[in-house]
View 1 (cartoon, rainbow, N blue to C red):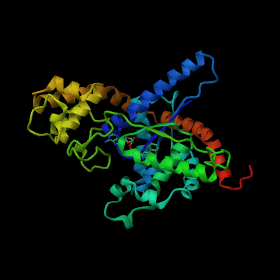
View 2 (cartoon, protein in one colour; view 1 turned 180 degrees about the vertical axis):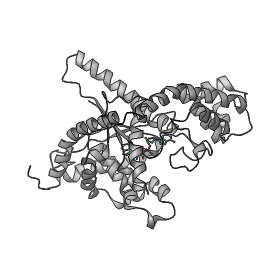
View 3 (cartoon, protein in one colour; view 1 turned 60 degrees about the vertical axis):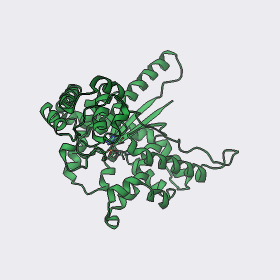
View 4 (cartoon, rainbow, N blue to C red; view 1 turned 90 degrees about the horizontal axis):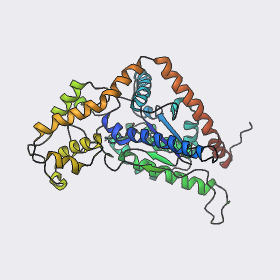
Length: 359
Ligand code: TYM
């Protein structure tokens, strides 16, 4: 059976990069798992146990300077945004890390296994710490260990993420392997130790793994970009979306008929990629339709596709935000379920390390 686990930081707005790179895949996998469970139940096998856990990585948000009031508001908003995108709390376990202490506990238990050298290689730390490494928080450095805990805690088999999280997932596998090796006991003949943790597999969308900024085709679309014009937020209204697309950086050339005609045209490639992802086609199909036409024609078409697809999400989002009680209840139920699923793995990690807990 499969365990799908993934998270998102609840800081700032949910943007198109998050949606196309990750959340849309979460919804697809949720639907696939529900269908698999239904079929397994009909075939009368053991109780179907494919499960999806999606969480708000609020503990991760402490790694950069933050405002507590904004974090509180952002957490509820992100929960509403995910439900608006199609995460169904009846079929997926939706929660925030802060309500499941096992994440922070396991992070510490893994910290004896993770090596400084491994963390030193993380490109996201280098990007986010910038030139002032000495002033970066410890949390920013050890953040990937918490991320490893997030997935190993639930024996995740698959982790749907954008390209930028691939390195963190590789680290999670390295930590799992060394922990299994060092503390899994000599249960196997090959001397490799038992399996306390499952190796998680990243699931990265082939087409929209890396959506770029609308202002700079070499920088990823990101919540932390100071320019609002660099990203489309899922709660932007139609006028705002049209305006952002119209102002997006491009070049003066018309669209080519072949993909290699986009070489060296990062901004143009990004807009074509977004169009293809939003219409569930391939960039080559988009070029077949728009070859020879300039951005004066392509941009309004792209804007319309975005408005049409995002309108229902925006509508649901606005409605959900008004129901604070319902959002609290969704997160509380999700967290209770997650705590239960986390317990056995957390106990075996304590046990394997020789930590005495009389319960
Ligand atoms: P975060 O909050 O930055 O982003 C959430 C998801 O969106 C994807 N993403 C993108 N995909 C394509 N193009 C982009 N421009 C783009 N920007 C963001 C990210 O790859 C991610 O999948 N550390 C994680 C959160 C996290 C996590 C985890 C994820 C914490 N624990 C465990 C998976 C498993 C983060 O900061 O993602």
